[in-house]
Length: 267
Length: 158
Ligand SMILES: Cc1cc2nc3c(=O)[nH]c(=O)nc-3n(C[C@H](O)[C@H](O)[C@H](O)COP(=O)(O)OP(=O)(O)OC[C@H]3O[C@@H](n4cnc5c(N)ncnc54)[C@H](O)[C@@H]3O)c2cc1C
Ligand code: FES
Ligand code: FES
Image 1 (cartoon, rainbow over the protein chains, first blue to last red):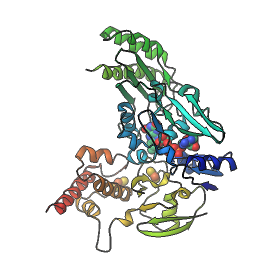
Image 2: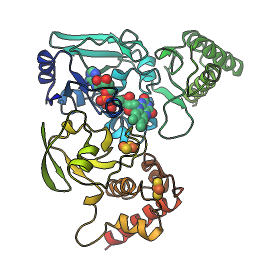
Image 3: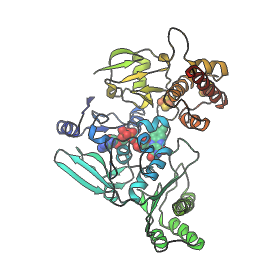
């Protein structure tokens, strides 16, 4: 195996020039599991943890190399909340936002936040940069629009980020658990609401009918919240796997979305 | 390839293969068998070490990417003078049964008390959530963590 350990983005992208099929490595919390299980034997690795550009963030951009431990202390409430639910302290110290996007698991905990904000993924190759909205980047379970030689640089957030935002996760225990269902709700001062649901479809998805229902009113009534829950359960497309049945996930998705919305509505 | 890293304050240049984890290098190439290989999936924390100031699962660190890193394992906690206060507290409180989880828990506890000396009991629990123990039920482990914390606080007091 050959490894490149670039210090900046230009060096990292140049690494791909000489090794177009190289595997990017960030925190290793997904990739090394595959290596340890002998599912993966990369020939060339480009290790990204020293790349300074990927470590940067401000109030509109989060670099791909920012770890959950850092996000936990960051300025975005739902992002901080979801970061705290990821794995364990050891996983949060190593695992990154870019790695969550690169893996593109339907259950990735950072993804509902990005979907709820209509965030864009900034990717770069030696040829230049392009920007893809979350739903153009995440194209299927564990599938992204990333081309060989391209790196995720980070995530661009919209100019207006609603202050009311919350993340919710259902799993079999509190710590160290992959979501059975996860959810992010954001709601602006006019009431416009966005609801993103994870682990209940091939990629994270938006519950648009449910969003529309509660966006028109400043204070949804109890019966409207019931209807909201029902619409979310209708809109998700879960499967049965070792974590839960399709039926359980559909029900849990509605309940979780409703509770997460209620947290956004709290005074 | 050759990777140069510091382990417990000593510099090592080791030959590593591409698929090797830091855990493998510590155990099989440097003979430091404190960190345990139990799950190799980041789930159990028995392989916990401090890596450039962060508590991580060494089974998930690619050894080739550890170039230039500073690593502390359980072997680096105590010194010639004796056990680290956290290790002593584990002994005193009977927080060790089969012992498989102990090196990881000791490193995690010592790291927490160093970075958050005032951690509350809830924070201690959350901080140790990545270290599984099949034997103790965690009660004695938490008592040991609290005892080490008190000991540290008394030492720091004027
Ligand atoms: C015990 C355990 C618990 C976990 N718990 C959770 C959880 O609760 N929630 C959750 O969502 N995930 C969880 N995970 C999965 C994992 O921690 C996350 O997906 C994490 O975000 C991966 O980030 P990483 O930096 O470790 O990625 P890596 O493992 O380094 O990389 C993951 C993938 O992304 C690619 N990649 C990484 N960075 C880039 C980049 N900049 N550009 C292009 N490609 C890139 C890699 O090539 C690889 O394919 C857990 C994993 C473990 C082992
Ligand atoms: S062996 Fe590394 S976490 Fe279990
Ligand atoms: S003492 Fe046996 S696993 Fe903890």
